[in-house]
Image 1 (tube, helix red, strand yellow):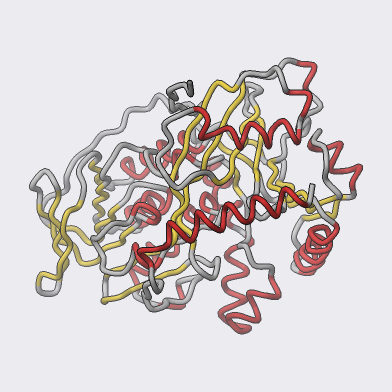
Image 2: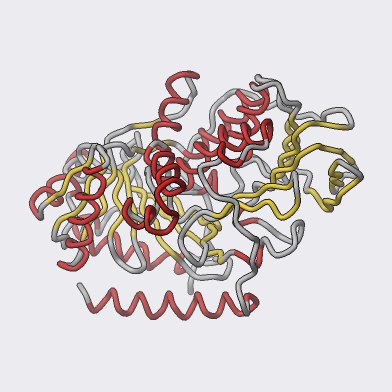
Length: 424
């Protein structure tokens, strides 16, 4: 019989206490969602002198900010030349320059603030499993080198040495990237945002958001009511019905992850230099080592809420394909979280009404992207100048036939997994 699953992650929380409170009556900026985007914006807005209230429906790290794989990857899914072609020279250059420095935003903040966050900045490898994928890596390396980025092209021997995995033809190394303890990062962001003057409330969902004269009014599940000059809805994959069409503009997926027991010293050849890795498969697998020596491996999983250990079995198969020598190693942690994707694989910034902002869609770049966006969003809330934003403001458009998205995504995952299997 399939066994019941115990869902837990290996991420350690900092020891600093979080003090929660409601601000009095009215604030300059109300933020709904205490993930990286919400807390980074709260931090920079409070330090710029704005009164800030953050409202979170759950506990810190209950969403993607606490449940991701901890990979801090700069850039976007699209390469530099594609971004310039899509947005034009001026807007494309602004977005490119911002995205190139998103990992800096995370690691510089950790260093400058002395955050209690385990981290390592040894780079990220996009490992190519076919010759076609290797040619994509060649072009990515060429384009980022032209932008002055610290990147390199890896051959088959390089990838084997740096990952310890089997089956790759080569890859792309981005030395700007790194890894963090994602749960610790969200807790520490909350701590310094509060210390800077922001108010934070947990476990109290916003149930309604409406215009109230020149201000916005939010009601919460506990019965609190607040008014704000501006509102940032930072709920991303956990957006429900608070803003019409927001949830319907996104496709959300479940990201499944496993962590092994600490590996013995005989397996130190696996990721010996500490890089994070994502592969080039359609249903990609990503992995890293933790400070206590575990292998953490993640990827897409079923659209349903998992109930059995078998729901993570596809990740164990992937681990054994890459690292057949780990056959006897136990998996000690299994967990999952929801991530939001957009149809064009770009982050989207919306302002459907003046003073109502939202950014959604991370595509695997969420830590750097959302932490980095905080300063720009806070500045825009203060100045109202669109040139302060690295992303253009776009219309909020629902995806046609959105109610069938789960069936379509599940079908695509099944198809892509079968195609990946043929390329082994």
